[in-house]
Length: 85
Image (cartoon, rainbow, N blue to C red; front, top):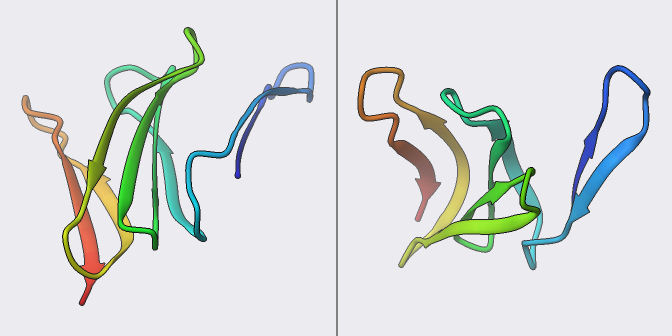
């Protein structure tokens, strides 16, 4: 489960349960901080928009488990996954 908290008022803003197995990484988008990315050992990467409270995109690996991810800082801003087979 991913829970997003407000730093200012220390209240939970939203709660999402996009994964079926343990979440391995969560981070905000480098360009748009209202977008968050999460990955799990269920081989899925979810991208979620906090403003609309909707899933933006889903990526699924064919093999292995997704243990982590990062985002490129150059002009492409694409996600890169770290997996184990």
